[in-house]
Length: 267
Image 1 (cartoon, rainbow, N blue to C red):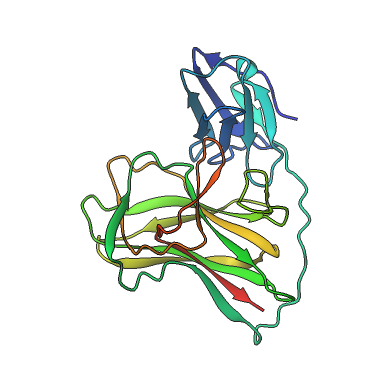
Image 2 (cartoon, rainbow, N blue to C red):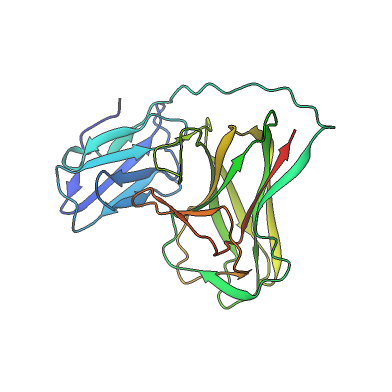
């Protein structure tokens, strides 16, 4: 259960999301059911959800990886919302390191034909890649990252979150109903000293065993605020998806190629 009783001021809801020990949960997600309204909390769990279309009887869904999702009426939200851990059973696997190969999703960026950019309010927006293990093979998620290039007001730092979903029940396109299989969020920071062409790689502290059918998602946690992410791109974007945080829907970006990549070891 959550501490429920909220303070909605006009058309704005402000609250703090904490765990069972009253410690703030960084970057929680709050969405309004049935409406394209959502907000991503900050690094200390504070959330401000504002919209002219927000009314007191709207239902808010407060979620965080590894915790039970809570639903609360907007007109009854308290200044603090407490989430409780959810029980997730992780599959065990025996790994034979000498029998594996690398599978990589994402653009090679060896010679992009176009120069593209992301800017504006990107907090909560995500890019994802599908992975489907073949026959009796399994996949260990090992590294993620992206490519960038020189440009005006190039982004020099940014916080990201990595999410992994089980999409075994998905028949066609990705859905907002599949489950995040991580026990806790995985965050990583991008930082460069000087702008220019380059490649950023984040190696996970420990590889993660993916479901047989998985979606690996890279999520922006900050808005650009005058900065831009410049990258080179070709018209090749196979298996690249974009998720709109406001409604949770996934959109196929093919043939657009996002700058992100994901690497797994297949064994």
